[in-house]
Image (tube, rainbow, N blue to C red; front, side, top):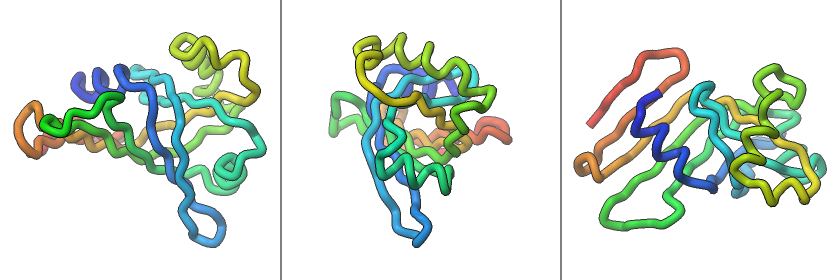
Length: 147
């Protein structure tokens, strides 16, 4: 994954995620996350009984965004991503708790499971590199650097 994308995602703490229910209706929610840049995984904590968890169990395909924790309107930066929620017993989910609680240690006191998003596509906008600068990443393709 591109170093600019890695650095940006690793420095932030919150994103938004959208899932789609069985009738085709989208549902969005905000989440605090930890990032595993080596594997291209995002981890978040949520209870099993929430509306979004129920939707995701039936349809694990998701899309989301990550914006800077502190917005600077003169230097727009942000990530749009697509991915899939991995099952709690998926091999890539085994280290989810370790990654998540390292970044958010207070969350250990809250009930819920640590969920894993396998990020498959990213579009990173970074105007600090030039107006409208886009860097894309796809899990199955080499790095694309678009303007």
